[in-house]
Image: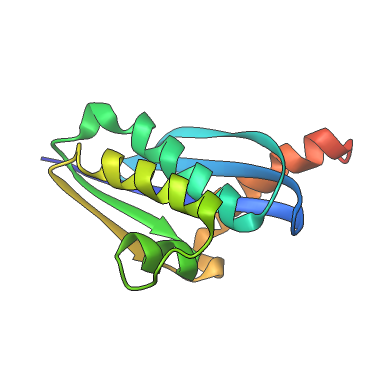
Length: 136
């Protein structure tokens, strides 16, 4: 059974500000798929949750594989693991969706990584903001 690695990132220019998400899925140590999009004016934390939700939906066909999601959002990772309480009402809704999606997988975990180790997902998310802002 192969291991799937997923790098996720949410970006916001301003907080709240123009926001986007990026998801990069690695299968057999190669980029299998990149997804992302502009999501409007919101906060970075909302963008981080949106990236995780899209990653979890996109990987449902691999639900029997070992999956590791990697994020540079310490808040997101600690909330998903239950180490931090979710205080924001909007994030609580996303947190419930994430918990439901996590329950669909057999062998999945989320891991905190440094920002420098998440450059590919960060660049992807920011590229959608740049397109909207006319910088690209």
